[in-house]
Image 1 (cartoon, one colour):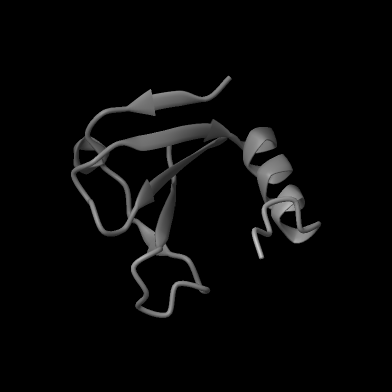
Image 2: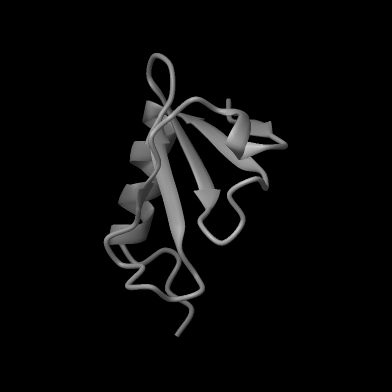
Length: 73
């Protein structure tokens, strides 16, 4: 089950920007967090919220993206 953290800057992790961000306003950053968990946040708001996902939730999310499940255009 995923978990919400109100202040992503409180997490002691090394954030990595999406390779697709290219300096645009719609960027996400991810970081490994503790055992088998991935943290996700909006790169434009480093002290904003973060979502913590178990590794299997993260893998399912990425698979959905690759399959076009979130294409809006």
